[in-house]
Length: 88
Image (tube, rainbow, N blue to C red; front, side, top):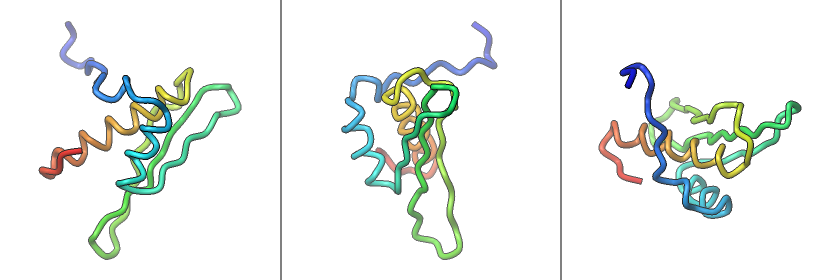
């Protein structure tokens, strides 16, 4: 296997779209939208305690379903927070 290719995290892929959105809402303001191309994209504007700090977590723009976009976004949130010792 090519070490440059990161395997897809399947942790959140068994959850419904509603469950994913509710879980993401614990960490910020989620947005799930269908692109003009028909693919789905998700973004969460994260809540942070530090003054003057903000960041967004985004999925790729190529998902065929809203659930896949939301699952990738939540997976990226979990990965980012884990780097700071926070478990999702």
